[in-house]
Amino acid sequence: MAKTETGSKRRVTVLGSTGSVGADTVSLIALEPEKYAVEALTARRNVKLLAEQAKRLKARRAVIADESLYGDLKDALAGSDIGAAAGVTAVIEAAEMPAEWVMSAIVGAAGLEPTLAAARRGATIALADKGCMVRAGPLMMELARKHGATLLPASGGQAAIFQCFDFERREGIARLILTASGGPFRTFDRAAMAGVALEQVVPRPTRETDAKTSVDNATMMTLGLEIIGAARLFDMPEEKIDALVHPQSAVHGLVEYVDGSVLTRFGSPDMRAPIAHALGWPKRLRSSAARLDLLTGASLTFHSPDMARFPAPRLARAALRAGGSGPILLNAANEVAVEAFLRQRIGFLDIERVLETTLAYLPNHVPRDIADIRAIEAMTHKFALRVVSLIPPIFMR
Ligand code: NDP
Image 1 (cartoon, helix red, strand yellow):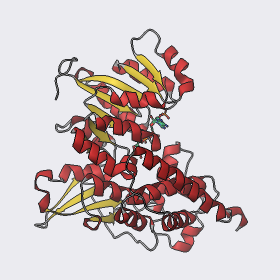
Image 2: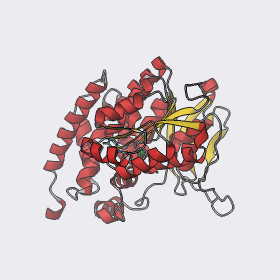
Image 3: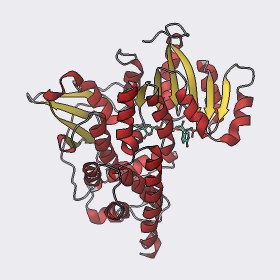
Image 4: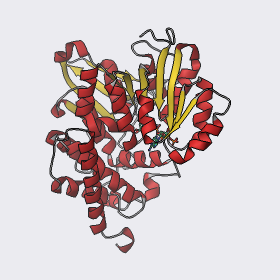
C-alpha cells in the first residue's frame, strides 16, 4: 500500500457510488473508515444519497454528472468541507484525483472515459462495469500496461476466474469456463420464445439497469459479453473460453489446468463478496455477503448452452474473433435492440435479428482511440435503429 499525504490510509474513489454496486462498496468502506481516505464519490442524479455518502465517508469531493443539479448538491453539502462538482467532465476529473483504488461502477457508456482516466494514472481499478472491456478492451489493456494500472474484475465469472488464475504460470492453463444461469427461458423452445411478453422478461417494475440486465440474461447476451471481457482481461484466445449453463449460480467461473485440475470460486451470487475481494486485494476483507450453505445448496448441475435457441453467445464469439470494432458493434446494436424490446416496439426474437443484420452489414474498423470508439458506437446506433424501423411493430402481427 502506497504511503500518501493521508498517512497509511488507502485513497479510494467510487465511480457510481449511489448504485447497487457503488452503495455496497461504500458500506464496505464505512465498516473500517480509519483504513481509507475517500477522494471522490460520483453519481448521475441521486443528490440526496450522494451527499449522505460523502458526509458519512468524509469524502474530499462529491460529483453529480447532471449539471443542472449542481446547486442542489452544493446545498446538500453546505456546512461540510466536501467539494461539490457537476458535469460529465467533472466525473472524469474525479477519476483523475489521486486515489490508489477506484471502483468502476457507473452503468452504461458513461463509465468508459472516467475508467480510462483512472487507468491512465496507474490506479488499481475494480471493474464491476463489464462494458468497459467490451467497448474498449484493447485500449484499456494498453493503458494499464503503459501506466502500470491494475485491473481487478469485480463481478461475475471474471471475478471468480481472477481468484483461480495463475498469472505467473499461465502456460499451465488449458481453458477458462464461464457459467450462466440460462435465464427464464432456459427450457423454452423457439416458438415459445417468439411469443414472450415484456413482463416475462422483466417481471416487476425495476431500475433501468435491472431491465437491461434482465433482457441480456434472458437472451444470454450477458454470457456473450462475459466471454469477450474474459478473453481480453486474461489474454486468452476465444477457443479457450468455454461456457456452461449452471442454473444454481453457485459457480461463476472455472479455470482448468493442463494436468486436469479445475479450480473455481464457490459462493452465493452476492455481489458483496467480489466487491470485498477487489477492495481488499491482495488481502481478504470481512464482508456480510450471504454464505453458501453447502448442505442445502450444494446440488449443482451443468449443461452446454444451446446455441441454436440462444444465438447471442455465438454472435459475441464471432464479434470477438473478428476483432477490431466487432465487440463495439455487437454491444451498441444490442443496446438499441434491448431498448426497442423494452419499449415493446419489437419482439424478443427480433433482438437477435437486429444484432445479426447490424453485424452482417457494418464494416469492421480498428479503433485507434476513444473518439473512434464513440464514432463507431454512434454509427452503429443509427444503423441498428434503422433495422428496428424495418421490423413490423408487434401490435401489427
Ligand atoms: P446502478 O444502476 O444501480 O448504478 C449505476 C451508478 O452509475 C449510479 O451511481 C448512477 O447514478 C451512476 N450513473 C448512471 N448513469 C450515469 C451517467 N450517465 N453518468 C454518471 N454516472 C451515472 O447499477 P449497478 O450498481 O447495478 O451496476 C453497476 C455496474 O456493475 C454495471 O455495469 C453492471 O452491469 C455491473 N454489475 C452489476 C451487478 C449487480 O448485481 N448490481 C452484477 C454484476 C455487474 P444515479 O444513482 O444518480 O443514477
